[in-house]
Image (tube, rainbow over all chains, first blue to last red; front, top):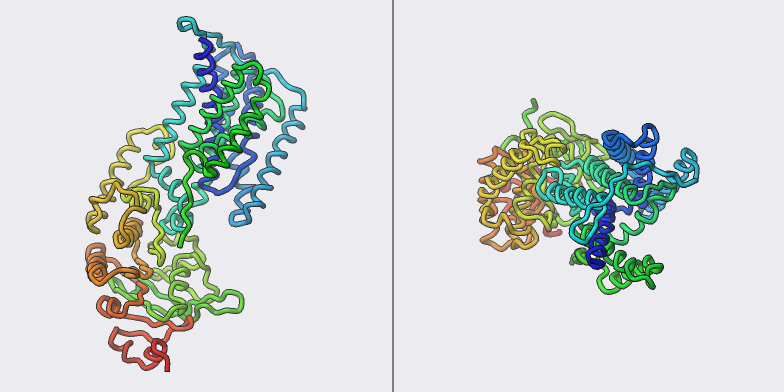
Length: 295
Length: 256
């Protein structure tokens, strides 16, 4: 039973990382940049849910759905605005300049949250969901919701990218931006859509974290952001299946570490060490593609 | 409506002090196959890059069916009706052949489909996808690529990659098709086949074609009119015979 618990836990952590890692990997693949402000979008999503839950007692579950919808809308808009204001003017600038800007945006969002919500940790009154027992195993309802929603989102995102006009345009832009543009694809709008999707997923990740532990603070998104980035790199950054696989792998490792008492405190160190090892053995990540040198 | 599909007026560009191209005056009529030739570094691809918005011309202007397109973005120029291929093939290598063509089809209004439709996979999404796939297959069929449609573009043999690039460009429904060295690296039989394909495109799509080529036999066999470029300017314009008889052209190619 211990084993099943560890497995479910690992999947739970993994799919949440995947929600975030997809944002990193899609933005990297299409806009060729690392958006280090991505983690803070999760935080904004979390605070949005906090604000709505505080406005009206969370006794009404219907209102909680409004809070979730608002979090998704706010994060999507924020992602698009950040891209337009901070990153778009740097199109064609050196990758380092874009990277520094992204870190700057991350600090900006954290500082703004500190000004608006102060630095004390806040309790978010999310609805109590309880547990269900299947045989001898009891699973939290929040875990089931997380798994079901995340997996559904991942499947529809994969289908969207693979079998839709916009998805194909996204892949085309990630393969050869110049050629895609000359085939009439508006690269700016594709990048905007990418940021919008990534940010909407980050809002969901914020929700799942709050369902697990209902506390919100300014650096709420920092650690999940870094972990998901690690997962994306392990899976092969730029690859969508890679981000999903890397996230599940990382979630499983985390859950296994958690289940073994003596090494549990070192789980972060272990996870990042595994990242280093994978990068040494396979620098492109598990599913990453090797760039062929052009002769 | 102008009588020319493409007209350039004193088109030119300089990079810093270097005039890569200047005083290019092309007049291309509907359904013409027009050749742009010249020694290496004569500025042929530079002209293509100006016509497709990759470079912003610093002098002159160019008109598609009488409408000036100078200063428009690359994707906007494509939507107005200029499509191109590349000297070094630039396909979407990790996409299948049919999807490469479907990317080219993206902008046509009849395949309009909102993000909402696609993400939630509503009926409209499936209708549009099916229509696009069918159209892409039709185009591939013309180029004899139908059987290869589910292969990755990077796994096609060289000659077929060239054809796929033309197919993808045609999918954007251009009024003017620019081909940058379409016969480069092809053997004689492939070149002969390509000439037939280009004529077929002209007749089947009522297409006007401007092409860059080195192979004189290819150009003189195919083109209605030719312009010779040298050092970024126009040396001569005329039919293949006229141009080849021009002493200046001979000097540019063979030296004094």
